[in-house]
Length: 118
Image 1 (tube, rainbow, N blue to C red):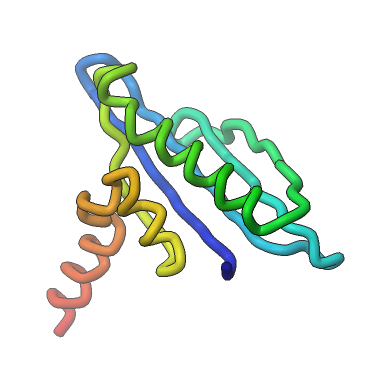
Image 2 (image 1 turned 135 degrees about the vertical axis):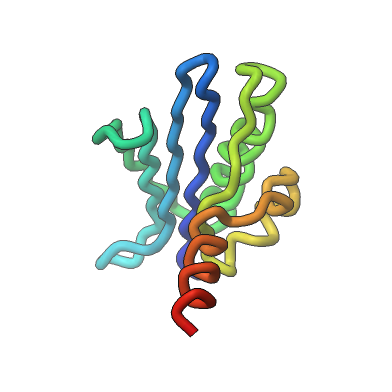
């Protein structure tokens, strides 16, 4: 497994819900696996939690559990998380929970701005 970055957002103007969730997974300088999960309201500093793991399997299990939880937000919170940005190595995990179907908002915006310049 290589380093993984995933950023998701959930927005509902009517309910005044603007949520952001991001996970960054990789090895530290000592070769141990860790994950940094940042979450909170979009545009605010939010909170960050760090989780350390001994094996790659533990990291993958943690990621699947976190992404599955974000995937069920529509049932739990009546709001759906959308994929904003993800590293290529995260795509198989995103497919498992059905989050890869949404278009990447940030990438779509970049493509439009490049097309306008050309």
